Structure formats: structure tokens, C-alpha cells
Length: 276
Length: 155
Ligand code: FES
Ligand code: FES
Image 1 (tube, each protein chain N blue to C red):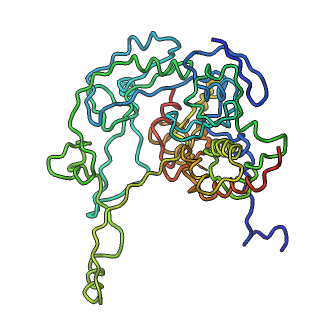
Image 2: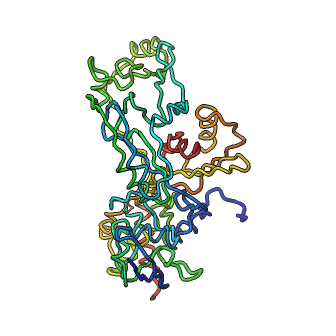
Image 3: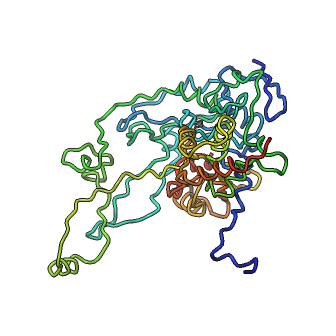
């Protein structure tokens, strides 16, 4: 077998050397000149309306460069992130696609624990986090529902007003019903089973992470982010969120610490960093 | 406060805040980014380094606790171009995919082999209880450590 024959052989991976010697380069390993840090303030409630923000003491905290709340995002007219995959109801209606704002504004509701409401930019990681603790958000807490089966019951709290019964789409795949019924009617044996899909946790060990770099002289943006799909991120971010031409934006996915599908999405945090 | 720490055989003196974590000292101040942060809640083990030869999670150690002590990170494991037997083992046995957990795995395994040069499979699995790998399913990590145990060079 010549050296160029690889089928049936086990080959050494080219990336292993850097990974086993600590020379990998994941997003958080990158340090750019003048880099500053963002800390996102997130809702501690699953369902709560924001009455107001008080950022005064955070603004004068050491090292703080800027603070943006959902109100600033709303004022700037920035939309939310789109869903990258369009599905339809069984009857052909398009799926309900409620808005996913970049940060929740006052008067609007946080839809889950961890929904972003404000972002603090500071000179160091610690200062950003300290200042975030000084942001006061006045929430009005509503009932929430956490189990999918309960969410579709009558009277369940609605996550999005635009999705009645908390259903965004009702999708099916497979042979047409008449065909299946015909097959069943002639089957020798029929087994029935109630099947509930298992919980999936496609969580990688490397957390979400992004660095935005704006080159003002050339009006170009670079986003370094841990992503399985940098091209899609660029497309969605440019065309649907920021309204930037794609040629001005470069999305770099360096070494990625696992993904399992969870890093295919275009995450809100990427937009925050690019748009600043 | 001022600390003096030996890292991978070199001495460093820096001013740090009392609350600074060792992992950020290694990553941000010394730019030794092979030590990773997967959680910072002491769950994942990606940040494992040696403190005076013992495996610790550096996200749960204050920099000032390392004052006057000696730290080894993944960057200090190879001897020039000669890989440590554990590094060889991970490469030979395909003990990694994304590589994010690998430095922590190697550091915790090095501590194990130091104490117990011929561990059983069960002992290896127990030693890894504080380290997550989301990619490999662990089997090849066990093989990698067994490879290292059987290929250990008298250091
Ligand atoms: S980062 Fe230290 S245990 Fe996860
Ligand atoms: S190789 Fe990816 S987490 Fe272990």
C-alpha cells in the first residue's frame, strides 16, 4: 500500500499536537490590543415584565466604558435574531415566529431565566461584572410554565402572545396518512407505543464566547466566535439583524471546544459584540 | 498584593487582587491559555493544573494561595519536542476530539500516575470523576492513560 492510500488505515489527526500541548487557540484564548469585556445582565425570572432600569450607580463604577439596556436597543431600532430554519404547520400555515430582541426593553417581558436585559462594557472582566451587580432592574414577576406537556394545556401562561397554546408549529414528516392507514389495515401485527422524545443536552464544554473587532479606518467588522457555522452567522447577522453588507463582515471560528449542533445557531451575544 | 509563583519552572512576581483566580492569572497575565475555563464553578475540570505536584482546579484557587508555590500547566508537560507519555497516549489512542477538556485530563491523569503508576481501569475512571469530556465518551481517554502507564519513561 502506497503512502497515499488512506482507506482502511487509521490516520493521525493534524490538530492533536496543538491540543495536547496546550497550544490550541479557542476564542477565549485570543487577546486583541485594546480589548475590553462585556458582561450581560440576565433575567433571574422565567417570566417577568421589566418596569424600569436604574443604571446610574453602575455607570460611575470603576472601569465602565458603556452600558446598554433593552431600551437603548429599542431606541436604536435594532430587531431581534431570526430563526434560521422555517417550518410549517401541518395545514401549511407558516410557523409563528415571535421576535427575539437582543435585550429586553422596559415594558416588555423576559421570556426565560437568562434572557438578556442589559450589557456592561468595561476595561476588565472583573470590573464589568462588578458594575453589572449595580444595575437595578424592576421586574413584575408572572407565572411561568416549564414542562412542554403543561405548556399546551388550556390556561397555561403564554410565553409569546403571538403563539396561542404556546405552539409555534406542529410539524410532521413521513408517508401520507392514507398510505399509512392502508398499510396498517393489512398488517399482520400492530404494535402501539407512546413515545416521548428524550431530553437532549447538546452542551459543549467550551461555553459560548465571542470577540467583536471593528476597524473604523476601513469600516470592517471581525467577529471571532466559537461556531459550527460561521457563514450562516454572517449571513443572518448582516442581512436580518444589522443591515450590513456581508463583504464588510468577517466571521472567524478558531478552534471550537465542541458544538453538537448547539453552535450552529446565530446567537444574540454575537450581535451585541459586532454592533458595538 | 504581590505574589511570587513558579510556573513551569520559571519564577514570576506580579501584583494581583486578593480575589483573582489562579486560572485567570495563568491565562490572562501569563498568557498560558492551554488551561481552559469550561464552567468556573468547579464542575468540569478543564482548568486542572498542578499546585506543588497535586492536581487542583485552578478556577477554584485564588492566585494568592499559590504564592511561594510551584504550578505546572499543560504547557510544562512536554520536554522540548519530546511529548510526555500522557500526551503521546492521547494522540495514539485518539483520546480527544475538540481538545478543550484534554489539558485538564492530562494534568489529572499525571497526578494519578504519580501516585499510582499502574492503575486499574476502575481507578482511572474514579480519578477522572471531576473532569468532563463532552466529545469522546471517555473510553479512549482511559486507553490513553493506560498507554501512558505502560509506556512511562523513568523520569
Ligand atoms: S473551569 Fe474549573 S472546573 Fe470548570
Ligand atoms: S475532547 Fe471535547 S470535551 Fe473532551
